[in-house]
Length: 227
Figure 1 (cartoon, rainbow, N blue to C red):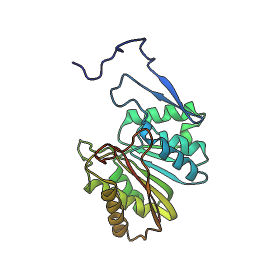
Figure 2 (cartoon, helix red, strand yellow):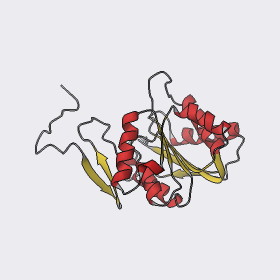
Figure 3 (cartoon, rainbow, N blue to C red):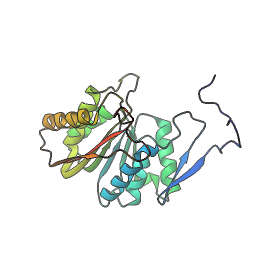
Figure 4 (cartoon, rainbow, N blue to C red):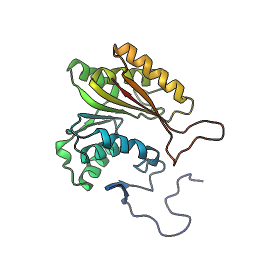
């Protein structure tokens, strides 16, 4: 059987583009696209955090997917956020979400690139950001697979190098075998390799929508670090 049937078990099918709202923002989702609907509820609390840090900030959204973090940052006055993803379709959906919220997509940097390669180039260009969101997939295949923990630690190190003094890194992982304590250790290792002192590293509670399991495991782990 198809694990993601195109027709509903009951009721009418959803439209090809279903608009959902969060706070005062809206996002286009596709319920016919398996797990890639375009919007993840487990990041609701983190989107609120990004919105609170965004005013006047230079924001970099790595592994941006359909740009939900980009939208909330832009709506709250971020300075032309940069969104980075390897998927052309994901960036097109980001553009659509920006337009749905009355934001001119042409005023935002939507870049199709490998995150690690781009971060290295940005370091050589001495680019700086005030807020960087690091929320990669648990694993990605392709010419340059992204894996835990090696790829994540390197991405965090490169991102930390780009942070301006006082800047924040929102580090997120959905990797099942990576605990909150392990994620904290990865960020400490990355900061040390980047030669940066961590001014603050805060564990973020799991969202109400995705609580801890009975065995103590968490589906999503998040940390907010300031440098």
